[in-house]
View 1 (cartoon, rainbow, N blue to C red):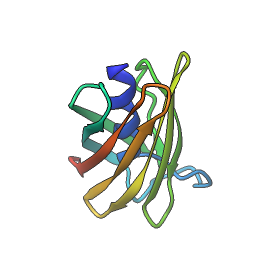
View 2: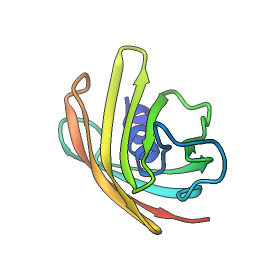
View 3: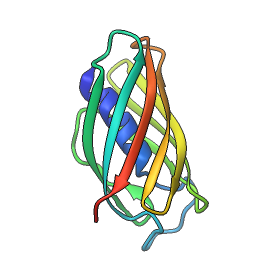
View 4: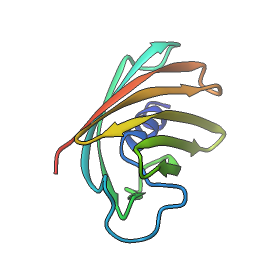
Length: 119
């Protein structure tokens, strides 16, 4: 459960465009993401590093599988699935920073996320 929520927002903060072409992307690189739970019994804070390559989330082999992405303008929409649990995150990236919100109906938790590009 903890891994799922963290991966959700992390990937959110640095994810790929649904229709983005392959190749170098505007948001490629390493992102440090902080995920904060505002409602529900999930852990209060998660911190992750996520890689983006070619405007797509790099599968880090974690427990949750991401889908979705970042549009060329920076709008973020990501869904993470692990077993029967899922979470979605939305928000915006701009330059070296990003922020947004997340929710998991199956875990009854929600909150916000923020991210900073680190490389």
